[in-house]
Image (cartoon, rainbow, N blue to C red):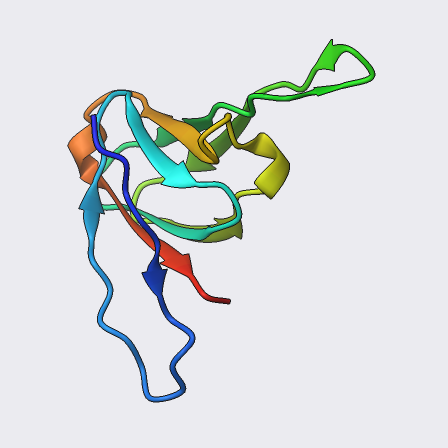
Length: 107
């Protein structure tokens, strides 16, 4: 399990960012961060973000992100999805190491 911090990319001159390699489950990213997902494999993958919250006593469904072979997507992980430590669990199906991602903050 790895609790990845967001790389601060607020600089106007560019910032080196760290590529993370997916695991089947147990990694976490900060709530409120932006994550860029990249599927390096030849097959599709699904990334699941555990939302950890409710609205009106109803559970909010976990978010799934579908990545076709070679596809790159990015998006913000809403703050309200964080657990008590402001972390959101990441799970990746199949050969999870084919999914690389960058956790970005400061934006």
